[in-house]
Image (cartoon, rainbow, N blue to C red; front, top):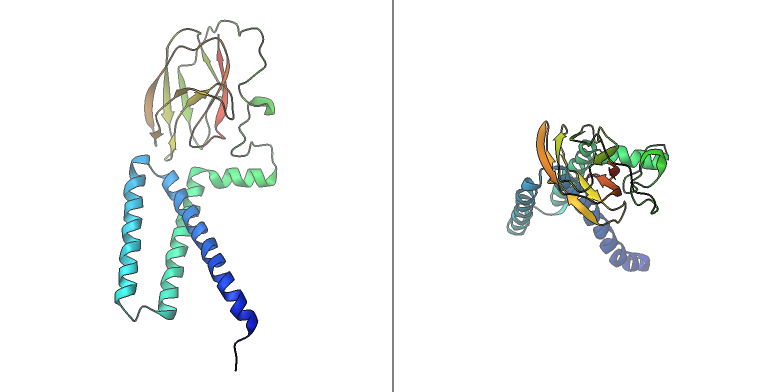
Length: 229
C-alpha cells in the first residue's frame, strides 16, 4: 500500500515548523530564567545548560537503546522542566502579573508602556517654565513587590546628589534616569541591586533644571517622574 501523498507533502513542512515552535518556546522560557537570576549567575547557568545539551547529545549518539519512545520521553520531560522554570521565573519577577494586567486592560500600566501618575508618559513634558527650586530633595527610594515606593524623585539643579536605593525583592532592580520614557537618552544609570534587603548609594550627577523620568531597567513598568529645580 502506497503512502498517502498528503503525508509526503505535509510531513516535510510540519516537522521543521513544529521544531521551530518548540525551540522558540524553550529559548523564551530559558531567557526568563536568566533574567530572573543575579546577573553574575546568568553566565554559569548558560554554560551549565550548554554542557547538559552536549552531554545529552553524546549519550543519545553513543547508546543505541536511547531511541524512539525513550528519546521522545526524555525530550518531553526536559522541555517541561525548562518551560516550568521559565514560568516560575516570570512569576517571581512579576512579569506574569504585568502580563495579566495588560491582557485584562485594567488600570495598572502594562509592561513596556511606562506611564506616570494620571496616565501621562513620565518625563518629556512640553518646554515651558523651569520647575521652582527644590527644597526637599529625594535621598532614598525603595523597591518592594516589583514596585517603587515613590512615583517622583526630586533633585536640586546643578548639584550632585546621593540617592540610597534599597531593594527588598529577590530579583534585581536599579534606578535609571532618562530625558523621557520611552526612548529617551539616559542621564544616569544605577547599578543593578539584587535583594532581599540589599542597598546601594547611588551618586547622581548634577542635572539641569527640568522634568525627566526614571525607571527600573529590568522592569520598565516600574517608573515615575523626576523633577530638578
